[in-house]
Image (cartoon, rainbow, N blue to C red; front, side, top):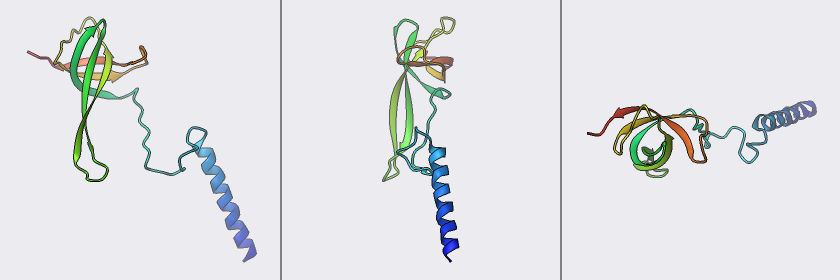
Length: 123
């Protein structure tokens, strides 16, 4: 019985060490196998939204709407976020166009997207 207890405590310590190695320095405050935190990589996202401003040179502001469930009542809540996107001179856009954004390297402090295509142009 004594050897089995030592072996189980040793395997528990090894498992804890492996978890600590898997977590690394970036995840030290979170548990190793928690599913409550989701890591989102924004650089590869494709977003769709409406152009709300074209006042800047080579840059537009696009409002992207999303639906997410309320954490307690599960009703879907509509929220919007505004992203700055780079504009290509060959594809002119106007306010009200529905466009698709694709992620790219950071082009400035707030600009991380390019306009990939105009899905629906305003008439």
